[in-house]
Length: 273
Image (tube, rainbow, N blue to C red; front, side, top):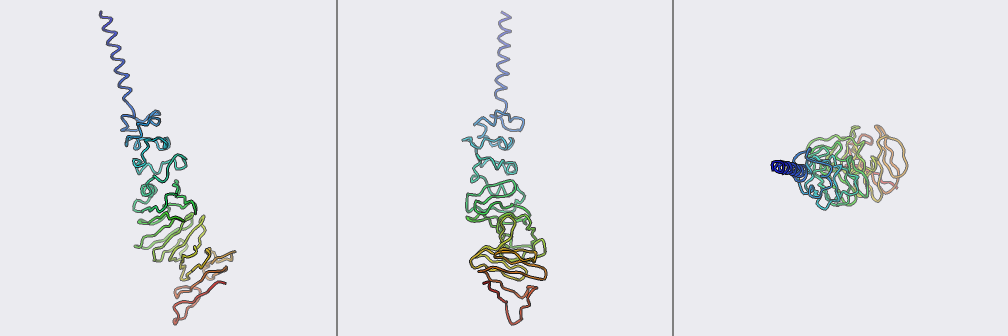
């Protein structure tokens, strides 16, 4: 009789241990990284728990799981997301969490298209390519994913100096104020870039060191080496200027240092042929 009781108690004890062990881990308890196991990533129920997203590894998430909740992704995990994973639905990611995780929590990212793709080093627009975001832009910068490009609107307050060596492909709008580039060039307007090459898009305009470029029908490339180039371009040097191409105007404002503008004139104009 004692033997039967002993065996029964041992079986009960073993079953209790098995039951407790089966309840440990995530799910149901996802309250720490130690609770996350290999099986957790395969369990659909885990993706219903907000703590799972907080303590698990984004590189192992199953984005195709029907219970996956993009709204539960913590801000700090945006820097760890595997953005090249084909299962990620980029249109459901939070653009402002992304921009904050990448270094600018006072910046805003406005989406006018859902076709952009996020990456660790920037945002890819289907028409223009990769914009390096947030890069070295000042606080309160506004990023806009427009239908045909990414526009970076600088804040209207404060004095700004920009390094444009690693913009990628985007349009910088100085917000109707003068901004100093890293090589001490003063710009005001919209300056676009394609793979770090500056240019002025048709229908935009930019004033660079007191010389306004106004494209009429074609893009105009911009160089800061003072050398001759091919195509539609303006090349700024410290003491010289080259401009070739067609369908754009140059306006020499009084503050420019290359061409003296008589006091009786507000500007001098040059029209390309």
